[in-house]
Image (cartoon, rainbow, N blue to C red; front, side, top):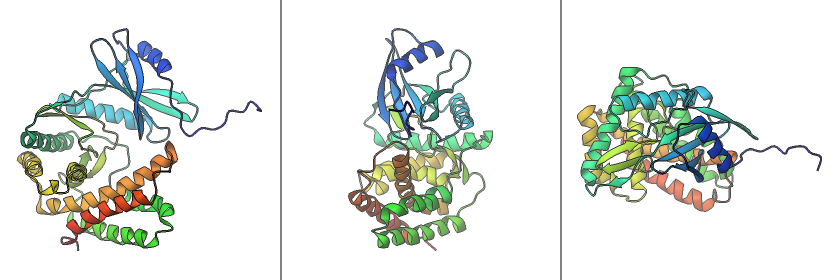
Length: 332
């Protein structure tokens, strides 16, 4: 051993040390506990006091800058102030919401959030309607407030061109599959470029990740959280994500009364154009391509690659094909 610290791309932070940091930074009731809860594009710790539960989100080094997290917190607080049920960030004693941690791999950013409680109703139709309303209300509030977002937009670069670039090395032995994805993506992108506008209300601030893992219901009332994928993009994309996710467990979800109720709720606040409705299948296919690219990025940041194999691509390309076939009749 020469005493040199070996470079790290990712470290898991000690919950005991984080607990002491939390006690210093926040007015939290003691005693409290802090335990590692989950990890993905962020590390999540569950923090418990005798009467409350919180979630501490710690970013990966280099994913976003400080300004990105500060803007995210500002937007969440603004949405909450405008009647959107959110899992609100918790303010530190010094008045800030975001704080930094100098980890071996570099600076990471932490935000503590209140708990989103989960006690869903069996009334899926009403729940879906209210979630659709919430999605449209977020878009409407954002347009009225002109939210500043420094993160890269959820544009065709993020949804198609960058994913194709990062997954290509993993498909070198599957050239036909890669060419299929590339050619199909070109057709999907052409539809978006020709048919959809960059003007409000069709394009603007989006949550970027509205699915059942980021929306918990108390009765029929939704509460939304995890704004990490937010950015400026097409609202039809923001709408499509819920259908894309639910269809993973039920292939007929896109034809279900629940989905129709979601769209009804959205349209009662802001009516989507025919081109936007047609674009839902288009964006769902692009979402699948985005996911493949996201997973390649996670492998480079903090995950192993053993699962990113032929079985993975057989499944994910199969899902992509189903969405592409749904969209194909409307493509140019």
